[in-house]
Length: 506
Image (tube, rainbow, N blue to C red):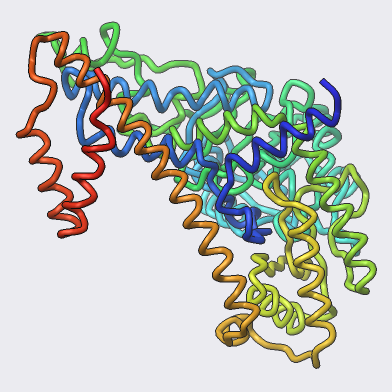
């Protein structure tokens, strides 16, 4: 397939999956990503299906839900070049990091290294080991807002047992040399724990080429699955050395083919010698899971596997290159690395002070350009997140709004007040965004009506084959009453029109 065809397929797939962003400038995926249509529909279908319980029993239904949840593991594994048995589903990167901290065999006198550019949770998680005598030290960043292998090596004393870091830093998008750090940790016998929340979905990562001991990732950022589900990777070579946390019964091997079958045995007792799987899912909670989150994550993962991580990275590279050129023309300071091998989907720039950064943020938000301001250890500024659904037009809108801000007298302010001032331009932009959302909702309605018509036709064929009347008037009355109860007289008219449209030919 030619590069032109690949590019066309990539663009059409993205437009199809993110229709609500057709007229909205959303450059804040490092905070939270936008869910694609397939993920929204997967979650909606599951939620709607739960009111009918299509399975023969609650036991069967629970089993099917567990199967749906488990389907996320092989997709996550494919994304990072792992095996499904190496993946544990987590609530978030925070949940995965908490599990990693609890699992590592650390004792008094041991030390943990983290970069001083890390997200707050990295410090919160490891600092709680101080009551066990474990010390946390930071790797300082250089004047350019980055850290290298040499800086880590200089701090590796025999007491250092863990290097924990984000592969992409959250304030300036610095992409660490993970391959070199991996080699260093293996040579020195140091555990390598990686938070890939700002990496996966934007950049490729293959744990076969770049070995890590533990990797955690939430789904709500660059994987575009903001439904409370993520995953953790555990290297099979290190799992025997980890402390498995106490888990629920789903993480244990049942004394029958399934737990549903085990419940039918009269000799089943709560106290027994339970065996746990050696796979990573034994590190999950092992109870009733976040099923909507898991199906949303599966759908989102399928999209990024379809788009291919390499093509996503190339798209982001072209966007950030374009943005760097534009910021240079405006005389704004690019804080993020310019080198390709240290670049990510995050491009941060600064205006000269925290006050003016916040002032510009307010202007951008008022113009309908969604970005953030973030700092850690003195590094940061206006953070722009370029993702698959972003275009050069989005960046032109940002650069134009920044230029407009530069032409006005500068004043340091918080973003809220400026955002609250209504202008014809901001009102028009808001209307455009709202209409795009209406269009997306209309597309969903059309799809639901089409699906309803198909189901209705199937029911009518089944009634005819069963020698029953084609129409069930009592059932139709139930539908009309339900719509009337929720929507009043308009609901009655809508229900009657739906019944007319979905009668179907038999």
